[in-house]
Length: 627
Image (tube, rainbow, N blue to C red; front, side, top):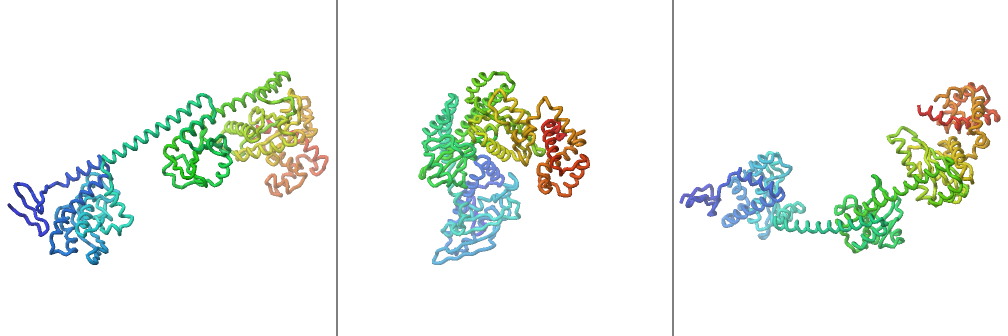
């Protein structure tokens, strides 16, 4: 037997061609073979499990060496600790040294322990760099495991070693630190995470259980969704769909529109819901829930809420309510809630299509009325189909709209959006049956007085214009209202009145009644159009000849000046001009007309001419402004 003594701590000898270290059979393994195992483990079980594997492996090596050193009664406890790095280096793991040490023992009990040191030329970091390149964190798991196992075995209490920097990260050397587990506090969680990793088979078993649970959850969600879809196909309403969901999960359900008006509900007293809704507050931590589902708490429990989308816009909300003490099944319930929102979206789309179809039919009916295609009896009979009594007095409203500035939206988008908003306004807010016809840049509304009295007509149209301005801030909305009519066959005449009136509406006064036109409204018609144009030419002279943008600017200045009764301050404010700028324009206009603008009689004649100009030359003026 031949003995090779490296020092007093590590004895290597050969017996029957087998190698032994400190009387334990040993094998020589190259660092390259370790690197291959390292690479295969990461590729097959992942780096997190590889950490656990190597840490425990190093821990066992350290414990075994500690047991050998513990047999040497001649050594002090501190000497036994200091021999750890020496044995570590002798075994070829790394060149190891201690740089700092704090060690306190009272009555054979460890009170404090803090050692720091370095590893140079770590075989583990070397192989990681060769196989994977630079790491984002420490990689010497067998080394930290060895140090942890060795010191724990020597001192008899749990310690933990970790790397503060590592060659695998590109640092010049590995820096380590060891303390009592109790001293690491939160950082000791890394140690416990290593120790508590489940065996792969156990983890696979738990994963399989989770997959089975997910499969059952998906089956339940799929079954509920199929039942809801079948109800939808049958043409049943939202109440029957909520019955299916309520029967499955026994939860209170609420469906609201975008204004949070309740459309349908199940399993809840609406008065209780309204009173508790004000106390809803969003719960910040929503990790357990579906990304589109918000969690709210309120006095009596918890609510899950998800939006209903239609054509890319939120049109409503679906909510599940949980009484206090009931634990929500977030994963399953959020999926079912999402499917319910999808079904509600389809219901809303169906309702939207039906409403639009009805509105188009009504609009076509209005066109036919104005064309004189039907007799009065035929009109009354057809109006019954849309639940509208046209034997009553009525008004025609002309609602025009245009973009105030250049906008990314197209005119068609504004036209479609305005039609939908006006239709929804009368249907959902005012609850009125109104016929809506369409012209380029204009909606024609027929409103009967059995629904809105003449006194309330202006108030309602003002509210409508304000609503439209709020919803579409970059557009201008103007309205003209016809005189009261009783004969439905004269709807075409009423429309012309409304269109004439709207041409005198402005941003300052967006609504004009045909009756506001006074005598001018009676005079303007096809028979005397030439006479009206002559009157305009006589009064406006060169301002009317060869109209262009510059002359339209003078005409608009004159109109505002007369409308404000000759008040310079109010005129300047309405035109956003300085007083000096306004005086310059008025002097220019006076010179062009060669008339006294302060003469009351002359003011009346000029105002009549300007109003007539806005009406009879409306299309021409609009074309010049668009150039």
